[in-house]
Amino acid sequence: MLKNRLSVFAAACALLGLSAPTAQAFPDKPVRIIVPQTPGGASDALARVMAQKLGEKWGQPVIVENRAGAGGNIGMGAVATAAPDGYVLLMTYVGTQAINGALYRGLSFDPVADFTPVATLATLPFVIVGRSNAAFHTVAELVAMAKKVRVTYGSAGNGSVNHLLGEMFGSGAAVKLEHVPYRGAAQALQDLLAGQVDVVFTSLPSVAGQLKSGNLHPIAVTSARRAKAFAQIPTVAEAGFADFDVNPWFGLMAPARVPREVVMKINTDVNDLLRTREVTASFEAQGAEPYPSTPDAFGQQLRADAVRWGKVVRTSGARVD
Image 1: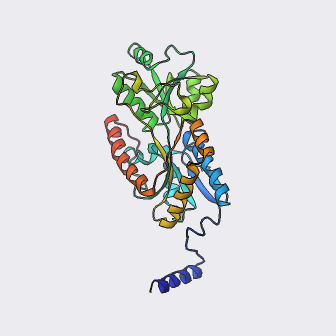
Image 2 (image 1 turned 120 degrees about the horizontal axis):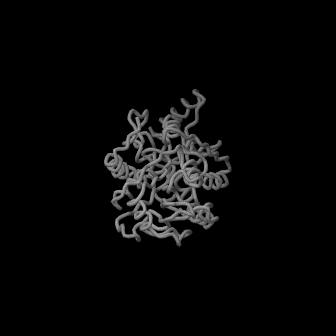
C-alpha cells in the first residue's frame, strides 16, 4: 500500500513538473542563505564561513544574500514564504528569532511557528566597546562616569540584543545610559569612532579587527566565561555583576514544513563541519564557539528564549510599530 501511494505521489509530481525533495538528492541546485542583517556583522561572518564549507561539501553553490531592514523582518519574511524544500535558509540569531515576536506588532509571519529549526552554528558573547582614548576603560570606570555625566550607547536598532543589553546593563548597575539606535551595528561603530556615541554593545565578530588593531578598546564581554580568542577581555560578571550572562546563539532555519529528511541532511552536514579544525578555528578567531545540536533541541531553545526575551522586551518598554 505504501509503495503504491509513493508511486502515485511521484507520478503526480512528474505531471506538475515537480520533484519530491529527498536527502539523497539534496542539494541538486544552488542553495541560498538569507542574512537579514547588513554585511560585516556576526550573522554575515558566520554565514559566509558555513556557505563556503557547505558548498565544498555539497558540490553546489551556497550563496549568501543580505536582505536587511525592519530589524531583520524583511529577510525573515522572505524565508517564511519561500518554498519548503531546504533550498532557501535563514541565517538567524536569538536577537531576531526570539525577540521580534514581542517587539513588532502586526508581523506577517510567526518567528517561531512559521520556521523549521535546522541547525545551530555557534554561540558568541557580545562585547561593550569604547574608543581607545576614552576616559573609561573598565566596567567600574564606565559606571562611575555614567553616574556623573550623560553617557550614550549605540545599538543595531530598537529592540535589538544590542539595545536590550544596554538596558540590562544599566539596570544592573543602577545607572541610566542613553540609547542611540542605528540601522545596523556598522553605523553605530562608525559613530563610535567619530565620537558621536560613547560606547557600543555589539557582537565580537563585528569589532574583531578594530580590537586587534587597537582602534577600539574592549570593556567587557557579556558571557559568563571569557572568549577563547579574546581571553584578555574580562566579563561583566567579573566586574561584580555575578548573574550577567548573555551568550546569544546563531543558527540556520528554513520555512515551515520542510521534509524531515532534508532537515536532518543539512543538520548532519553542518554538525560534521562544526567539528572540523578549520571551521572551529574560523569561528573562534571571531570570538564564537561552535555549537552543534539537533533540530529538536534547537526548537526547544527557540521557544524558551522567545519567552525569556519577551519578558525583557516588555520590561524595557521597547516597541516598534
